[in-house]
Image (tube, rainbow, N blue to C red):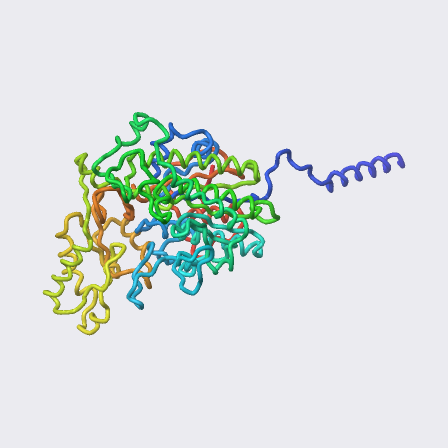
Length: 547
């Protein structure tokens, strides 16, 4: 009996010890959270660039993200107009201009009757330059960003830094609570910030500026990476009539003699691939000197590569210059990812890459191929419209402003004449439809009545903010754009402007791909889900299944 009880007690003790034993950690288990998140936005990158240039990319940049990460191959912007500032704001807020308020790079302010720049803030000062390029902050952004949510959740222990040549590409992603945002000043050639973030530049930024990299880049010509015949099949031959030229040049051909055409300032650097290289080098310096990814909380670097946009506007998306810029950006990405390997390691790193908008084919190229398209002179069209409004409704300034393809009517004059927008709409629509390239004019106060496909109507609705948008919107036909027929631009709801890459890589990301359609507003809530955060307060996106 005693022997039996003794055996039972031993068995009970063993079972109890087993039940209370701590589970052994899994071999090679991933950390609960990444130590560092790096958000990469490429300015003016259509999805097809990944396909068209893939065979010429190296193994360490875009192809590393494609082969070792997850590609959402059918990602679109879900609003119009598709510009830089709304794009960056939408990526990081998980929202649309109707909510976050960034309806363009600038917009008409009815109160001041002046244009308001998206990050303009006259209450702050420039830090790092005597210019006014630092009078900027995120105060015009009406919603929080995923970077704000990270700072809130960590009680501001997480570090957040934004970096881009363009102020809007650094400020809007970094959000309201950022530790810092830095952008490039063409006047001084320095990386600068504003007093919204700091009273003076950190010593490491001053040391970086003292190296005068912009001078070095502009002291050499821009020559192509490959022989001209190696661009065949993915780009047009050099020197096409539908390509624009750099200021100071007479022909759009390689090599581009930068030392000859540069001026006293550093604006030219933006229009070369060296602007991206400078951005990469500064981002690496920020990672090193701010010890991003080395603390107890998850840190976030938001970096935007802007030179692709400048080059695309001048030369167009099928030019040798555009391809050369992307091939060089591929090398810059390889350098950045290689540094991140050494800095924190893949298992501690979460990367996403997308674009703030796509790009339209050059109208001149389209017409040369017998594809309908052209350049629309909006100012001339509006001047003719004003004449017809005067004839129909009498004297007065009926149209206060035309910007972002929107007409702002004079509400004071409408009240005085006891008229409303609906009363003028038929006359305006009839007049504008006579203009070449115009497909429709919609009353933004009555979108449900617009003769449009539901899909296009939803994009217009998502892009309009009640306090900041105009009264009517002029819609152009495919391959028509405002400006000249050379070079290119963006801003429409057509696929060439809305369809962009979305790549995920690193912590918890398994290789894969999906053709399921998703929206750019899905990025921020997906990040929130991965990081265990509350999504930004204006978020309307859904969490993506990255598997």
